Amino acid sequence: MANMSYCRFQNTLMDMQDCFNIMDEAVEMCEPLDLSDDEQRAFQRMYDMMSDMINIMEQATEIEEQTEADREEEDYA
Image (cartoon, rainbow, N blue to C red; front, side, top):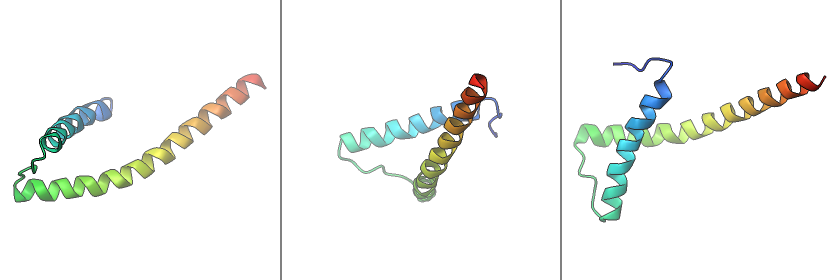
């Protein structure tokens, strides 16, 4: 089921936290993740997407900061 726009990031964050916890536990125990072939492919796709996501989130943050700065400047004008 697709995430509703009003809670998309909240729901995804919870799912990512679950994945993180599993990986963290495996690393902590020095054990492989023991993923099925489908899960291994999804793991790789997620890894690739996260690299892209970091870049786009940095850009989005810059836009948010600039927008906020512009609003503050307008408030003082």
